[in-house]
Image (cartoon, rainbow, N blue to C red; front, side, top):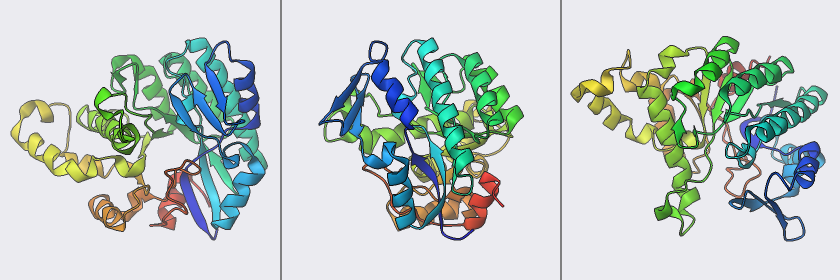
Amino acid sequence: MEGRFDVHTHFIPPEVVQWLKEEKKHIPVHWGDNGKTLTINHQWGFDLKDEFIDPNAYFKAQHQARVSHSLVSPIPQLFLYDIEATITKELSRLYNDALSRWVSEHSARLSALATVPLNQPEQAALELRRAMQHGLKGAIIGPSVQQKLLTDESFIPFWEEADALGAILFIHPLLCDDPRLQGRRMANLIGVPWETTICATDLLLGGWMDRYPRVRILLAHGGGFLPYQIGRLQKGYEMWRPVAASVQAPPTDYLRRFWFDTVLWDSRALRLLVDLVGKERVLPGSDFPFDLSHWPPVQPSLEAVHAFLGLP
């Protein structure tokens, strides 16, 4: 397969758009600027470009950038972990079924990840299995749910199912709600990678990589700040027994068990990441079509993405 790949791209199927318009009483949704912006639950606002909601516009942009195959994810604004669990479950099923149909119609060009009701982990496990039975590769999930990190015992049913399925879990943060970061777009600029850093460090030091070795964990935005600070984790592991208590290997070893996208916008940072974890663990990504997308995606290793997605 020639051309470029993209493992970090987002889309909202028309069925989901219609559902959002019909479910305003359950989910606060604001369509601003004549439908050109979308705000979910009073806080997750973004420019609603045609490429988000129009399959033809999406494919046209992919063709122009020579992207021949994309791993499509639901948008993180629609995780809906802070909404009633029955509503989250309903949207998850609708979103996943729509993506499954889209992928089946364009299997040469698309793979997809599910969204799951992680605010109800048992249901999230069931939905993950159902979605993967319908052809999806795994799920995109947030780094926490209502301040609970993903190593919380309540999430074990979901992790056990993901491990049994050998699922991809794409850790993708929302904006950080730290009040110190509300100005100058810092909630996005540094808050987003910070949330990934917290989640990934917790998974690493919590022993989750050993506990669930078949799960393929992909970290957004180059892994946040974790690769750059792996030396600090390594030193803490060597100095402090509590840091080493739950792991079977040094942090530098576990770093190479994650996968990372290339959404970094800096060739020097990307070279450092590749040097730290190996080219086979760094996958082309863009975050298209959000404003802060690295477009077109950098392509460090075609072999790596083929292996990760199970493509021929």
